[in-house]
Image (cartoon, rainbow, N blue to C red; front, side):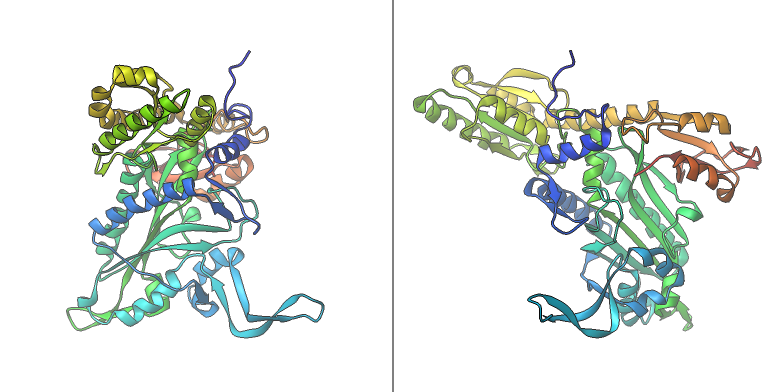
Length: 502
């Protein structure tokens, strides 16, 4: 008989539904009355705030400032960059009227047509470029290094909480430079920032690489991404950084007088990550009992759960818990104080335990009359589900190292999975076999990442479409040698990571 789990179905039984149930069990978010949109609940938003806080600090350490630009973009702005508008046209939400009026039947109807339709931003290159065109006159005005935290809207046919929603939260960096070399350096620097965040905060190993022409951001010269493997073997693009060349500066007239007195078009970049990272966390670390949080991003590092039989015990145990909490919160984990809550709700011990298990709290600390007498506590780790009794002094002095060990163990576990599920494939037959099945059943796929030499994106695309596989990226640390295309047998010097993806 299979062991009972807190989440049903399990990952092996139905991975997509397991994902939805983890979100529900952890109380992270829910669907809103607006189709394709989500309500991010306090626990989920606290996690996003921790992500924001860490990333914002990293952006500012690399010289960037925050600003805010309009939600609405005149349609003519998008039309200036043909490839960009083509890439986003089918996803755009369009505002055509500026007020409502009674329809004579007890309802309302749009009125007051706008002279020019407004696009609800799917991304902000064009509207931000209009400001930069005014701000940039001389090489002395460069570089401009700006980030904005905002929401964007992209109509999606098939939505899934955090992974793909019509409206989502994100940050988008937009920078302007005097030379192509400076802009490319910025593009790669921000890719490194994202990789640093993913691996050291999310405990999620990533591959840094360049996108092929067919996967490139509309209007970009080069697009770079970080790619992570989820527990079902699929890839998730966790962040992108784009070298835009002079495409947008020419469309938006971002010009400057250089040191020789000549007028030149600037070089620009853009880069972003979104609330999709919450989905990445869920699918990287969670198990059949619910969410598993890396401590560096957890809204609460540890929860203390008092256990008592009557009011007399309650007073003594609570007093002990409060003083223990104060001691624990004086400890430092990473660059922050340890975050500790006390859960004194009138619930049975089992209910309380599973509530915090499903929410992914890294450490659970139980304190009852026996622990009080021994001046100790009973401590359980969420990542391993192992528990042990500890003295109070031992717990206080070791809590930071325990959290650090959980963080490391989560990364090591995810890296081991990726390593074990990454193969090199030489032939079409091997490729077909590796990526066959798994999609229709909703169960864990048998595949993962495949490193393959290929000679032409156009030549392999029909096979990829058939198998629902994508070229994730050409790894930056890939081999410098050459090989033969797995499909055509042609000589090539390009090896890429192929995978099914979100």
